[in-house]
Image (cartoon, rainbow, N blue to C red; front, side, top):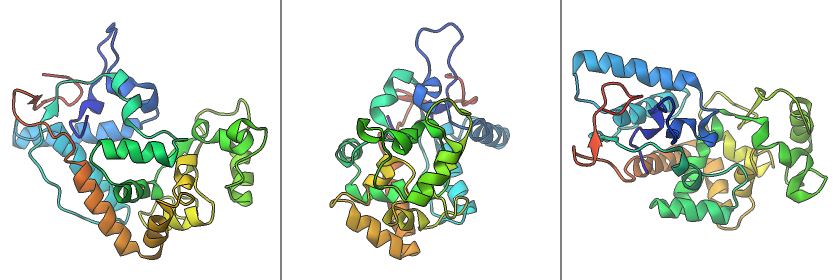
Length: 260
């Protein structure tokens, strides 16, 4: 729906409709992230009760995390209200998949008012973070329905990933970094990796292969500041998608996990 903090709502016990947080695609989200927002909200409520939405806190926290990891610091527009709807059923059709094609990615981003440039710039967030084996194991053993790996993967990376992620079974908690070179630093190495066939997800690597996105990948890989500028512009646009304002459409929760 947009940046309305709906992902923070906890499902009600016994409810037939799970909240967004408990959608299959969101179950790997780290507990620490939700806890960070909760703590920030508690501090803000003590100083300015009922004034700052959970949605604004979420956007500011995302900015601060990017900056602390070495990325750009940028101004965040404020004044959002929190959404009144949080449904697990709405998640799947509105987020990218690990094996999405570039056609599917462009269509999804365009539906939110975001361009192909925004798509590639926002994908650069994968310069930090990790993914569980289930999101890319198919590329290692059974790509395209055949009993062979994705030919568009660096052989050394393929070997390393197979050590952690067996074809069947294995530890479901094992993760691999999106950026194998500087996994904890917010930089342009993600794009360098794509040019070397070292993208972790099929949807990542596809950006360096499609003629619509390949030139943007090449451009951002050369210049960290250009990537930062493109990322900030895209984050600003994304943070304004379907912004909720006013009591008629939104709320300002005192507890980010519960509707008022």
